Image 1 (cartoon, helix red, strand yellow):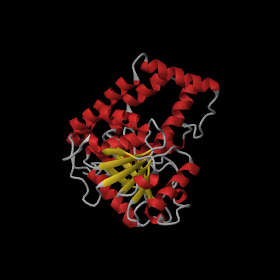
Image 2 (cartoon, helix red, strand yellow):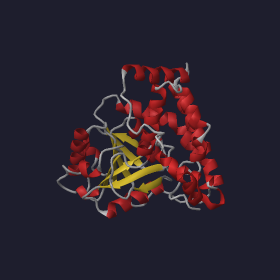
Image 3 (cartoon, one colour):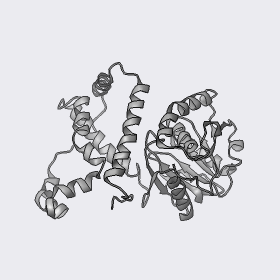
Length: 323
């Protein structure tokens, strides 16, 4: 772990679901003090249990100096929770009206220099800051990936009123968490990575719906095929290397016309009861009797070792993938 960002010492996390708890774990492991705010009376118990469960993985990755689970406090009153906040991470359910209301309330009570970062996966930052009457310029999107305590990517997006200063402040902060902050050049629904995943998900539904493959076979096609290469290189570098010595130039010349072939369905299939049952039954068959917690433990260990491999074979690559 790196040294905590000097300008940020106290973080307030609003909303403690899966994503919120993931953020809390990561913040604590990096030596920050965290105040969590959630109206659910059972939230504190769930959060502390989630942090405790993930903590051995954080120890394996390396804890920052002063990192402790005891640096977490809970406060149901939002205004009180925000009193000493240097940075705010919002994670309430993905409903536009709710998020706008909560962020406007955060803006009303938070110290004026504190960044307000929303974990939204699809709502535009301009929409989120629309009801802020005090400092909408410090509202941004900071979209992570699950499990947040291990996955390095976080997409940063500014809205119409966002000032660059706050994007830069957030970028430096997430850097201190050993994350890979990707500044999205302009706001777009779904940001970047989710749009790419949505394309694969859409085609996967078509393939299962048309009886071409089961959910297990679709997953296997990614796990043992492109997924292995994507973990290291991404789609563009993968295809560039597929073009031989001439790289992408040769590949586009030879295979470019194939882009016009109707391989993809483009539009998502209707999620009928029959398709939903195929997807649910197939997924449940894949996991069998394995408990979700055991699956999560195996996933987390894999992600730790995979990131170690990435550093070994792609050392020093920056976010754009250049060595």
